[in-house]
Image 1 (cartoon, helix red, strand yellow):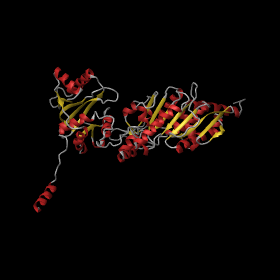
Image 2 (spheres, helix red, strand yellow):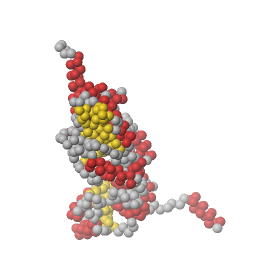
Image 3 (tube, helix red, strand yellow):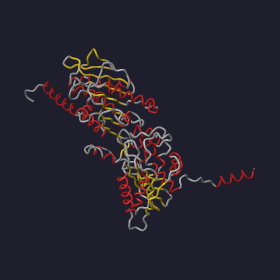
Image 4 (cartoon, one colour):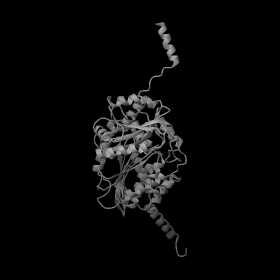
Length: 518
């Protein structure tokens, strides 16, 4: 181009690049990853998703966010290292507090972000010199117009923080608190350590924000129900929170809930028997994930699926349920109900389950609804659920008859039984549960273990049902068990509860020989 110098051309290229990287977090991550590592950043749909969440945090659209994703997902690269570096590019005064379970890990991330800022490529775009009087791996600052401006403080959760707060008392993007894996895997097994981490989390948030609007970004794998994510979800940390879950095994239903422009980016070409597929086939092949799931379901449900099972669970092994696609022939169907006494947030749900007794002598969970309903709504739901299943097979003489509705005769259940009886039309019967819940569950576990209890492969409610079953504990520390009670009632009613002992012919001969020698 005539009259344009090479320096001008270079300056224009840098200007365009600067505009591009300031506007797009993923582009920034890709650019500096290649500079640091010498290879391309392998982009998957979840990187696009997370980058857009980060963008919303920077713009103030999202106040605070928790992102739950598997280990090895590049979460630290995208949400810590490059958010610090890009955040300082957007505003030299931005201040970041970076926290992890380990001081060494937090400091390493801080050092990596500092090296990005210090790089020649970054300095060409944004001249953010590292202040010489505040330049350590743990704490460092940048200069703007020759003056010390924003910076980073990295520490472990609960570590000593002296004279530093994230953000500023000013409008716009001013930095953030970045919390990456605040709980160590081994500590998740200790209630004391979990509670300690949660207490430190709330004290850090209270004391280390320069501005109440300074955003908090938590990115972690789930480790336990009462881990920092669970603590925040329960209201332990005040403020507006957004929760993002990215499980390792996903379904069509999960993808359908992603932003529309991200859905086409998901590779669902390889699926397991349940229709699940890897969230990132290139990095986490489906067969590897399935092997991990089989090896340790507790670890997999938390760290990979982001749905941790309570410690002490395992009484009901969800892997022992038979998963069905097409239904076999059924002899009859029944509806079993468990009603909650109260509808407050922390009380159990009311549940209606439709079960079928197969000609193969197995029981099949056909349908389920669950909610917190007051008496008038509870009655309406019960009638609607009955009518729905009564209509199935109507006019077909070979269809399995819907025999009755069975409801626990206690508290709100008693009222529901009376109301339905007074209306007529629905054969309803009360169930009296004389044993404690653990005993009732133990009475039917053997039927599950031998494959006599079947649940659908694909239903919108089946994942929550399976999780609740897997979470059931002997000491009643699980969150809910409302779906379990109707299941136990169905197994007990249709199969008789405990699977009878079958003595082999060889064993009988051995007993006979023992008797003859006495």
